[in-house]
Length: 101
Image (cartoon, rainbow, N blue to C red):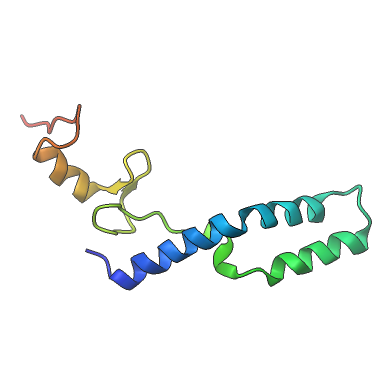
């Protein structure tokens, strides 16, 4: 099980990214638009830099929904390999069969 503080920090980052996503998208569109004047683009990039760092989607870490583990994460299932194996062995994941030979 991951530290609760790490999981909560990541949840805070998710909330901030969701909250600032519209503003970020607008400022990025202005900053990368070559048709606009240079001063306007520069001002947009400065405003973008003023936004909280944790509101950037790239700072969100994929973590297991069950254990909070940050590594060996399957995006499709939103869980780590260990949680997948444990739940699969118990028969809680439909269509997953543990192979044995």
